[in-house]
Length: 151
Image (cartoon, rainbow, N blue to C red; front, side, top):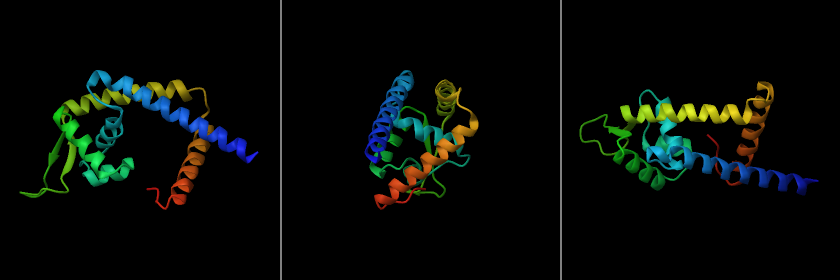
């Protein structure tokens, strides 16, 4: 029984991850973006004051080298800009979306909303609340097994 649950969980999560990656890649391609850019642009759009690279790394659970690459790519496309709090400051710069970045992120958020409506629109909100609460608990427990802490 436990083995069956593990297999069902493992296969389901793998298929979900592959589907999400494929959808993100296809939907952001017209903007010259990669799927790895989506979460960071959405997070920047939610932050009024911007986020530092370290904060983005924490939010996305990715290493700082990947964050650095993503920031460089988004800046080169004109979607993100850096703001120094103090003159000459090199580190802990706040990153914010440019006007173009805000426009693209708004369109991406509309795409995300449509996809979420499609995949979960027929599921009662109470079931979705239980699902996400359970999924977060499983995620947190798995992070605990790896010696990391979920934020």
